[in-house]
Image (cartoon, rainbow, N blue to C red; front, side):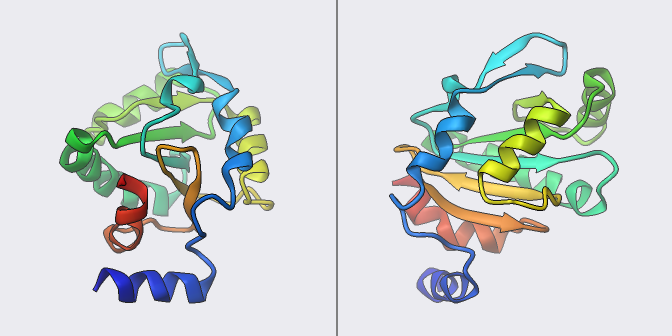
Length: 164
């Protein structure tokens, strides 16, 4: 089933071969953004971990829909080293924290509208549409890019490459 899903994503151009896009993540890992409390977070601290990086905003209906699934993935796969990282394309950290509390978000979030848009564009989302999700393996390679609603099926299709 996973192989079939990978084949479908490859055909759709959504699943990318590991190693092909390691250079793309340099800007991500060299960035510093603010946590919802305003404290700086160097994204370098996430290097070497399997990551789901989700760009989102409070006003985005598909973003709101996928957040509970991302929280479930964080809970289920944290023991295997997985970290979900939310990058809010917002300016008000307190409002993002209030939203995160209401949605039971259990993963780290950073907030930066300007830098977040720049990162999305540099990571392959030239239109800066939301939601936008990346799966990045331990070596810093992007194994999946997804514009639009991220689902468990998307994760399952790339989990083997992400978590090895």
